[in-house]
Image 1 (cartoon, one colour):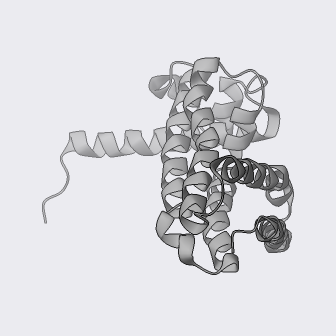
Image 2 (cartoon, rainbow, N blue to C red):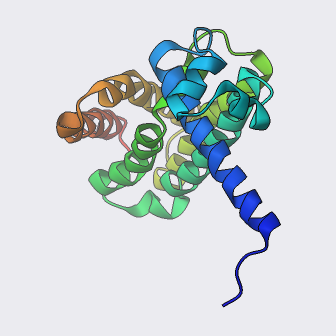
Length: 204
């Protein structure tokens, strides 16, 4: 069996190191925020020297750029799974499950991102793409509701999408802060709140 060429092995090691450093940055940003995190602390969290960090990232902002790109990809994938118009015909409970679960998962799997992009101190140009993706959720829900409840007036449908998004956002912090053993209970409450609201519109 042919072994990978040295250059490919070095490239693979470099990619793993970059991912390790980005993971450490995400953890630290979640704990102390972008403004207070330092490259020295990120390097220590990753178990490497500051010099090693600087081999891959010029500064803290470069790490944030990598995380922003990672988060953008993860959110786009979550949106595709959560807001597929083909799900619009499901019973309401299943419909809510299929919307909520991917959005919860992407936030649970990436705990540093909410703290990073919702907090202060991050350069504006880094937050724009992910902020636009978050804002696009309203439009995605509006599109799914148009299929599920075509009788709704466009203005009412848009309002429903806005409120549903805000219900989810208001409870997301509680879900993320809950111990893992209790998280399912709080996810169930998110779904209960959304189902109750959507049932009142109604969009069953």
